[in-house]
Image (cartoon, rainbow, N blue to C red):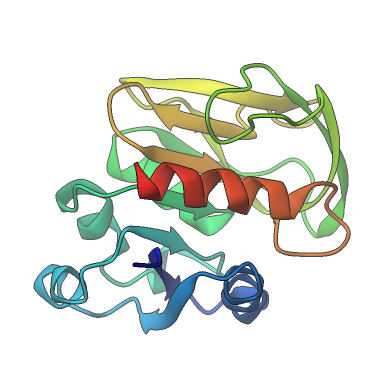
Length: 187
């Protein structure tokens, strides 16, 4: 049986790239609305969820419920990262550097999600908004010169947030992050 990962659409411009990247890696995937009830998500029996980027927390639908109530691996990308942070009591603020740009991130802890990646990665990221205060029971996995919390994970659950976009060609080793997430989903 193949791994099934749902991509939750938060109206981000790269949402379909996440879907296509996972599909091209051989994952059974489906793009779903962020307004589905938790029970509707559970009925699809996903092995994991990716929360896409998007324009604002106000348009993130029921994503906070998914993060708090579903007991499956979740990877939050950009806005998805911020949703996880906010849901668990962390602080989200306007970033010092908005707009998309190349950002070099430093991997502080390889963890499962960054297994096999180099210490420094060139990434494509927007910091219009960012996680500025680490939620309780989370640890920082990566930082950059412009943001202290480029990536984080929950200490006990398979909840991962990354500020940058691994689905775009401008990000080094982005596919490897998805492959690592696929491995996490199969455990």
